[in-house]
Amino acid sequence: MPHRRPPWRHLPMALALSALLNGSVLAAPTAWPEKLLEQLAQIDAQSPGELGVYVKDLHSQRVVAYQADEPWYLASTVKVPIAIAVLQAAMAGTIHLDSPLTLAAEDYVDGAGSSNARPVGSRVAVRTLLEQMIIYSDNTASDRLIRLVGLDAVNQVAQNLAGDQPFFAITTLAGVRRQIYSQWHPNAQQLAGQDFLQIRRASGSRKAAVARQLGLTEADLQPISLDQAYQAYYAGGANSGHLAALAEVLEALVSGRALDAAHTDYLLGLMRQVQTGSRRIRAGLPAATSYAQKTGTQRARACDAGLIERPDTLPVLVVACVRGDLSTARSETSLRQVGEALSRSGLLNATDENNQ
Image (tube, rainbow, N blue to C red):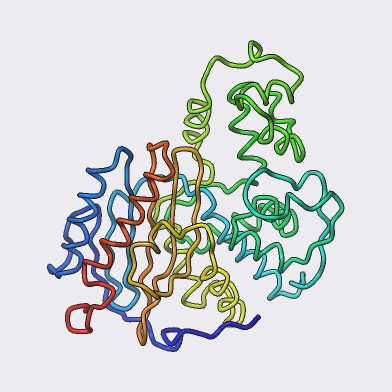
């Protein structure tokens, strides 16, 4: 389905650059950056977790970065470069969005979306998998698309578009599960497809379910908790990056450097339909604000990244992540408060005079 191109797509980028990094003012003081930094610090202080935020006004090119120059686990926001890799292949003519792909047993991963309900051997169009991956954050759709274009291509897209900003290796979603469960036992590297579905559907503890799937007992596994297994996995750095790295990918998308106009509009259209972030940044924005986003959620980690679209000017780019708080609801509250802070700062309705 075609999507209307927003008016800011036809406007030139501003050339002036001034930045605020890590709470330190590096440019002439302006109203909205100072207000935003103060409010972000308050949100962080009130949260039991840690907050990182990167904001860029693509009109004035001004940046506010709060604890953003360190690695953050990006969770399913990495599905944006996966989508770009697929659409670049479509642009090159090596794949077609309406071509059907066969779901193999190896493609299945637990998580949201409808792909897991399809039987092995189902034929699903590339376009349908893209929509499931972006709108519903479908992990099985993601891994099938990665298998289509290759993991090397996905990582090349991320690195090329992130520029000098650190963006660490993206893995399959099945690879995430294997690395986490391998903290308990190395044989978990052999788990695949239906194993992950069986583990998530099992009653009782996750650790007990993993042991059963491996043909072991809990006593055979490392004596660490699920939380500790996740923390050990996060320490490895996979699927992580500086918030500015993901921001660079989003800016490359919206500026037309990642894809041609038709495929850019298509992906942004999917991102406007995302169903997983209604209680995050979007909930703190003014009513009817257009927000093209992608969220990511994992144990003690939550992210929201996207483009807040404004009439007749370029959008505001925001990447925000929370870590260390085991409650998804509390993490979503912090991300909603980031949206509220953006609204209160004056950035979203800044005039050319106070936005330059």
